[in-house]
Length: 227
Image (tube, rainbow, N blue to C red):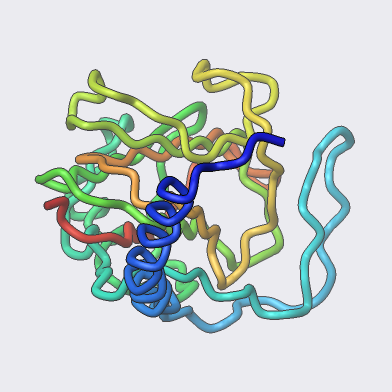
């Protein structure tokens, strides 16, 4: 084994000790994501699913909190989303970011069948740590081909990255994903993004096990403006 000269290991030791306070401070700055969940909307066991679906089993325990840097806020709050569905009015789409995520029928935004997306333009480059998505959780359904992407521009032409993809058959045309499908619950789908910088978020789906329509109740994008 090659031995370091005394001056080398002494320098390395000094640097390591100097870095300790920063590492400790960074760990201390992490806090649980301050997510407020809606009330559960149904009880019982999920219906039998079509063959070939790879769905995460439902847990009877609360989801562990996601640790994020202190100061993260919901960047999507109040922003008016856009959509691939030209028939969806701006007033209806605004419900997706209005903060009301209870499972009321009037709160659910319906989009046409087929592959459709909802987009949230964050207006400025931001560090994104989590995206939380509620389609419709009034019954035990599974949404098909869910893909979530982030980009550096609202036109989605710069630095497009996929942060979640359970479209294993590539039905959305965005590439085959490896993530598992999941039941909709009041906890929503939490996607950890680890501080990726982005200016826009786009969420795709292709109906659910109950309907060919696409449904959205709320989308939250947690982070902070990039420095």
